[in-house]
Length: 518
View 1 (cartoon, rainbow, N blue to C red):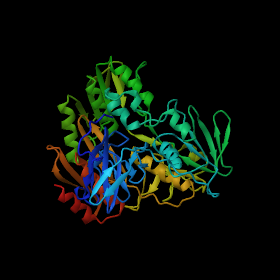
View 2: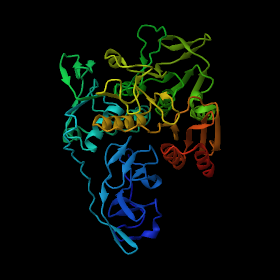
View 3: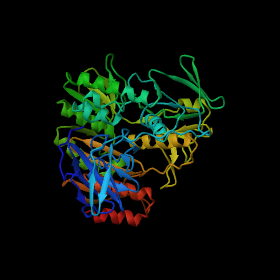
């Protein structure tokens, strides 16, 4: 989140429409406001020039239909209204009036936020309850108001803090570069103005779809017309004998991150158990705080299962160049006060142990309610469970992947938010298929990878460009199909591939799109 100085043409003075290609954009300014001018045919739209999520430059993004996509994290905004239509952005962009005179278009200095509509349909449910305030739950609540739901919205969470941006916890926040005020998704007044009843420190004991009730640990019962389960996932626990006084740190919540930040200031050596995304991002952040870091993992190379051999080796070399040590092909067998004993008998001295060995979906409430569970809460293409009044979204949901035809469960922040948005629309009575393409990003020092799609395996991969040169894409296939594409510093390719997969483009078209970029 940075403040940008204005640049580009003065849009109040006007520019020629021929300066903006159809489907293209032009960054400029109106007074002190950076403004983006986008063209779609003969229509022109003026909006804030930077994404409301983490200030990505929208001029480097992509116009898709009636929306504009941010290059950094693929947030999606409506061109006409500026409303945030796709996670991970929640706050809208301001819009400006455009005036065209012949071949010249000017932008007026009338920045405004377009109000959400309000539905008065008699068929709307009266009360929608959302359990869980992570990405899926929080975006579901916001989406209900964005599309005009006028009924009651109750958002229940056992956490003590306002819903927050989890991906930043292992990245800039843990490294010390992001202040605490960046982390909440919204401020308390936002929930009040949107009439979202946010209940913190509230544990749901059980749900009863037949009676349409949620029972809290306090004994209180809350009735609902529709229920959205967004219960998320829990960190897998490291099952290793530990000496008295040894604490294993996990990184899933804001409180976990604060706990690590508190001890990282005084602890000199850290062992990260798990060469996963969360483990490696934590390793990078702790190195940036000055700690000595060793990563222990059972795999031959980090991230190989998801990203393949070439990126796995490249990521390892990147971490090693920053001073991280790796003990791969090893597992811990004992945790001592002053070190971690590995299965080859060696000991890695440390003052701090962090486990990043994956997560498991939280299906306890769904199981107790008799809903179908299979390594996640089973939902159909509309994110509906077997109970007609109950939907599920996010890390806990197992849903049909329209591209592969298989049911999958993904643990990505943006994907969870987008599922929450679709679940919200369907809870209002729409019958919208979830066709979103899984997307995530991972940050390691100054390297940022973007990944679009879902590949069951990464051993059938083709590299385009050069990782070492900082411009690359890796295409992953599932048989003859293009299942996923990972990119390094090629946001343009990542956005284009996502859009192609959304419209179910054929594999050759996606491959040609990647080939042309390198």
